[in-house]
Length: 248
Ligand code: 13P
Image 1 (cartoon, helix red, strand yellow):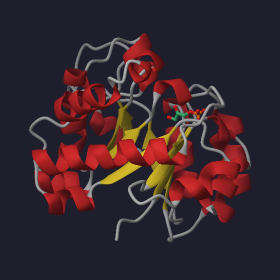
Image 2 (spheres, protein in one colour):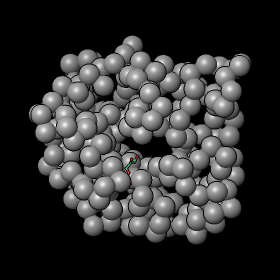
Image 3 (tube, rainbow, N blue to C red):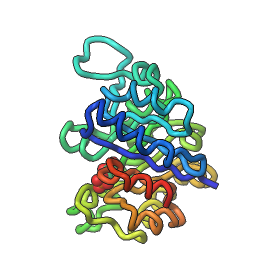
């Protein structure tokens, strides 16, 4: 039985004080062991949020990382730096990073592998554009993203550490959610790809989230689909709606 994982991707929102205030306000209501709950604030808030959720079941996630260990990489953050402040998960390959910062599957793969070296779980994002869906290329596009982003990652990591997030780009921040059936169809397809890359047992163990306009009114339906193991929540993770989604 795969445990659900619900993560809040705050993106570039909330300064440190506001981040602390918000987490203090909601933490008791999202502190559960029925699902894995992850909060992904901005880098500068990680350390303080880490202290704040210490002793709860809530996990800390980062939104990005660099794949080199250290050195002259101005503006970048290493996996060791994340580990040192208690980060458990890290989003890699979010479509916004692919779009605005030219992240390729190869870069996503390097980041995911580096995170696994330090025992941080990568949340690997994949998803097609509206144009690709309209041209019925979505399965092909997502399959390539999954294969290249997970290249050479061992079976044990896929089963126990890696989380895949299917986020159709046309559903992100648009209020336009994929139907539960569309989301489930792609999550199932991704599971089939994992089965081909590894084996059926691994495919049954890997956790696959859906992301894109998840809100309290659709969370229950989405999270009850056969192949959807959680949600990666953007806008709604910045408000009390996140509490409702965690308690779907
Ligand atoms: P929204 O929930 O705001 O659509 O964002 C989804 C997302 O990009 C989460 O990573």
